[in-house]
Image (spheres, rainbow, N blue to C red):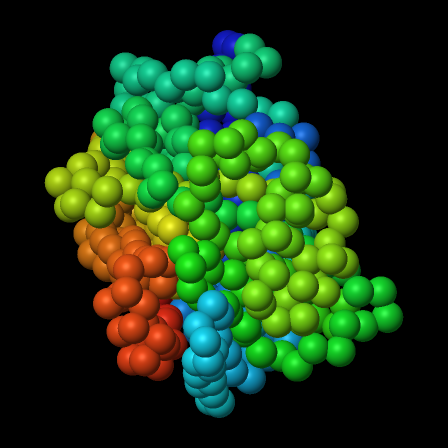
Length: 404
């Protein structure tokens, strides 16, 4: 399966828009099945914003399905437990839950994307390729117009182009909505080692949720989510102001957390508003239409409160590659191929709809509980919720996307 050009148009079997987690997982899944795809990335290189993310067991199952689990495991600590401390109480409540028997790590985005890209055939990713518009051609193919004037025709179009997805728009999905909260994330590099135990530490209370996780011997990923005042919203691209803001809001947390923030270089801090797709939209909107579908954040943007956004994107990639493989590898006449693709993408949509609905909703509720300032909610959270929430995180991770 390959690309060829007709006149000025390049013709492809599968085009994936976006070389993020979902896009590259899908491309590698297809490659393992012997199907070539072209991945269009608008940036000049792999984008590693976000620094790192928690990889729960569902993500490791997906990484194993595409054959890269082992090498990533070797590069990252195995987490021993989650420690949730409720700060801002007279007597801080601390709850620790062991991860014994569970494979949970904090994987650096750079390591993941580079490992995925390395396994793909040369030329799979086309950088500096921004999609400007999408239209139909008369033979079921989709036509993509790129900013540099290139025109591509493709049998299958997959949108892995993130929260502001052009492909999701084309499918008629609405823009994700702002949750009212924002996240600041960073990576602290401790040359020579940080000395932290491999624990996932979280601090909740006073409308703020924060925490940190060591990725390996030298790198520690941290996050801070809060409801910004209007003035604070304008700080998005001012790292120094962001660092000062976090430092001032976290004066009641542990010295460890403070040292992690302190150690973070300004280049290694980003802030973003937290947006999510209204979950019911997944039930009646189009995840796929004909030979077009979406995956990853283009499908299910969610708040980061259960740490599942990246993991879910990997599940999407495996399920999508499997459904497409069944459609594209079956021998049959050209006319039937379009129908097989359409059925394959429908099947993928059916499989992902409820899972996405469940995780978007759970994440939103967990965020609401953890950051709520009300007296009753705080009492419940500090006395009963921490154990419940920790268990919930493990339950949502107990999902197997299956093999290719």
